[in-house]
Length: 84
Image (spheres, rainbow, N blue to C red):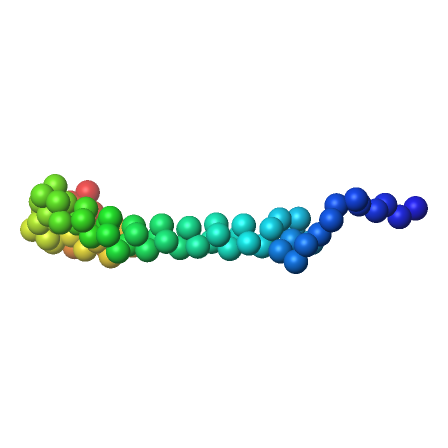
């Protein structure tokens, strides 16, 4: 017994997902614009704040490598391990 649906489909309906592709495109565009706004405006503005500049200065003074995968990658950690 085959079940049929009384739902009418237009050209913007994605039959596989049951959602409007136009709605999905709109949502994708909003997400992309939010990411661009964050990376292009918000994060650079935060990086210029006094709090963040002081934090960056302390990291550089201590010789901390922010790209180190583990704390043991830092030379000071090696010295500390030898003391233990």
